[in-house]
Structures are given as C-alpha cells and as structure tokens.
Image 1 (tube, rainbow, N blue to C red):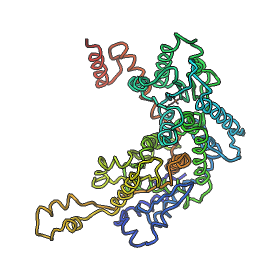
Image 2 (tube, helix red, strand yellow):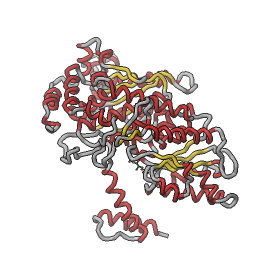
Image 3 (cartoon, protein in one colour):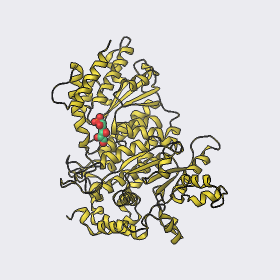
Length: 553
Ligand code: G6Q
C-alpha cells in the first residue's frame, strides 16, 4: 500500500493548505450564503454545525478522497463484522455489539456473541433493580444507600462520565461514588462519609490485576470487615457487599466475590470502550436499567448511522476528517472539548483517554514509524468556567486550537434564568472566535478618532482578536441518556476513523506498560529504603531523597 503521505489526496491537501487564504473562514461565509446549512447535519438526535471551520466544498472533497484511499468503508465494515482489527493483540473491537439493539448476529470466529451480551445485560438488570428497590440488602439487613465503584482508566472514566452526565435522573437510586487513584486520599475521603452496613462495592477491572484497583479493593475489603465482621459472618459480608465487573472470574472468586455478583465481559471489549458492558453497572445502579438501555440505544443509533451513511453525510467521518485537516495540514497541536453543561464535566477527561490512548501512536500497522502527526492533545473543561481561565489562549494565543462546543437546548435542572445565560455564552464564544475584532473596530467601539489619542491606539492592538478561529458546535435537545450515548459513540467512531486513516491500531495501549513495570522496581526500592543499581542518576537521586524525607523523624 502506498504510504499515506505519498497518496495523491494527501499531496493535494498539502497544496490546498498552502493557499494564502486557507484559514479564511469568514471569506467562506461571505462567498456562500448557504454555508451554515450546507455545512451542518443531524444524526441520532445530534446536530453538528461544522461550518465554522476553514473547510470549503473542495477541502471536503479532498478529505473524502483521503478517506477513500485509506479504504475507510472497508475498515468500518471490518470492525462491525468482528474482524481482528486490534492487530497487536489479535482481537476484534466490538463495543458496537454491546449496544447492538437490532436482531443482527455479531460473529466472532463464526459464533454469535449476542446471546452472551444479552445474558449479561439481563443479569445487570436483575441485580441493579434488586439493589435499587431494596430487595438486595447488606449483611445487617439494610438496603444499600451508597455504591463505590473501584476501578481506574477505562474501568472508571466511562461510567463516571455517564453517571455525572445523568445526575438529574439519579435522584431515586443509591449514591454512586468512584474511587480510582491509588492515592489513599481517594478511598479514605470517600469512605469517611459512608456507613459500612449500607455500602456496596463494585470492583471494576477487566484484568482484576491492576495495581491501583486491587490495592483499593483490598483496603475497602479490610474497611468493610473491620466494621462488620465482628457482628456478621465474613463470607456473608463479602458476599453481599462486593460485586465485580471483570473478565477474570478466577481472580474475582479468589478475592471472595460470589459468582452471582460477578458480571463478565470479553477480551474484545477495550477498557476505554467498556462503559457499554458490565463496566456500566454503576450507571444502571445510579439511574436505573431502563436508562442504561436508553444510553445503549442512543449509541446504537449512531452506530447504525456510522455503518450505513455515505461518507459525505456521515457525522463521525466528517468530524474525523475535519480533525485531520486541522492537525495534519494546518498544524493544530491540540483539540479542545468544551461542553456547556456542568453535567458533562468529565466528558473532556473521558475523551482525552479515548482519543489519546487510542491514537497516541507512532508506529503504523505495518510496523513502520509514521512520518505524519497522529492523535492531537485533547483537553477541555465545561463552559462557562473555561471562559474565565484558558479562553484567553483560544482567542489571542499564537497557537490555533480547534474546539468542539457542546450545547443542550434544554436544561434538566430547575434553576430559572441560568440556562439561557449558559447557552448565550457558548454560542457567543464560537462567534467571537470566528469573527474576531480588528484594532479599527476596537477604536470605533470606544469612540476614538484615528490619531487623536495615542494611548487608546496603543491599547487597541491588545484588545483586538484575529478571528477565523475554528470550532464545531454540537447541539442536543436535552442531555438525556440517549443523547449521552449518541455523543460518546460519535467520538468513539471519530477516533476510529482517524486511526484508520493514519493506519495505526487504535485499540492497543502498549505505551502505558513501561512505566507500570518500572514502578514495581521503584516500589521495591522504596521498601528497601534505597535505590538499587540500574536507574539513571536523576531517578536514583529522587528515590534516595524521597526515602530520606519519608523516614525523617
Ligand atoms: C483502556 C486501558 C486502561 C484500562 C485500565 C484498567 O483502554 O486499557 O485504561 O481500562 O488500565 O484496567 P483494568 O480494567 O484491567 O483494571
């Protein structure tokens, strides 16, 4: 296969990006009165306006031919069909099967995985309903008021993001807490407010060997037994107060979790794509199984759209291509996700993992180093807070950061007057980024006459904005479970498309292994109180310093 940078579409895009007016978005609007309508689309309850990007019809055509030359449609099909698209781990990536609401079978090695998927979902339904309605109780016979999910990475961020997003619908369920960090502060501060008699722990870990999760799980078990084992049998305490979402049934049993409280999934579910599996159990507990199903259904609608819509009308494909245009051809180093919704506060973090762990790769699928940029740095925070912090950089910094604004037309909270202010700010920010403000406009606005006030003219430069800064705006009617499912699925597929075009494997994460291994050696050193041979001088000195400070009387 021809290398990506050697393909005609890549070269044409390079030339296209070198035009002097390549980033003139305002000019595109001036020349095309239909632009706002022509460069926006709807799918699965999501509306995407991508008109505020330096993308013309010609740009789009070139980007679409880049996708075609990467055999994108065949790659999409391969993922949905359960082919082993995760080539370094020799596995399919079938998060789409977890939310397959159709009757279509999904075959892995000729076997339909859907009966197993449905069976686990049914067990999640029964268990979550029993906890929510108080039928399932703790060792003291009391219903559970609090659930603590212990997990990290993909076993934390996905369910946490969704539970936060659906807070308005969580009023009748138990409170759900998330403990991820091995920093004892996380577990200790969470447990400080909880009663052992009414607390259920879910250990969420695909492997059930993750250092942080197992450390937290063991400390939680100790806390529970210290508080309850004096009055109740240890087996009963563990059996009732612990559940697990895992693929490692041997280890969950060894930990003391009853098989009936273990919810399985499969090696073809990647951690950062696992919220749709048993890892979503905290979601079902927080907002009810029916809403969990609505979440799956929302994602499934986007899956169907992604699988069947032609590339030029395909939302994840368009979003991905625009991202490629920014990062590979216009040299944007990062990408900001700006939900104007406090309930989506964790979305930027979830997307950061999804995108950066999937596409932060430098070796292509053939094993050769790439000679083009892959996944950008993803960051962001909810509006309007960001406006009072890093938006300065977005508007006037030297680096251009493409942004996604995410807005919900209606609020789930009864707080009169707030939502319009929130929406107005979100819309106005994308307008300001596009429009900018010249020094002359600043002077006009402050009523100064050219030349008559040196100080005013000096300040006008500082108060001006370059404009032509790109953004997408995604609008949902309301942030219900279906919209949240659709939104996350949209980004999952965007990431897939980019990985497919960059010819990298978006489904492995070898880059997290080296540090994990070294941490074991450093932990040994900390236990020994001195640095063993073999570290670099900086690392040895740090270990020694930490040991000295730690052991000081
Ligand atoms: C995600 C990664 C990673 C993983 C965590 C937790 O795609 O694989 O974030 O989810 O390392 O792993 P366990 O679920 O096995 O504890």
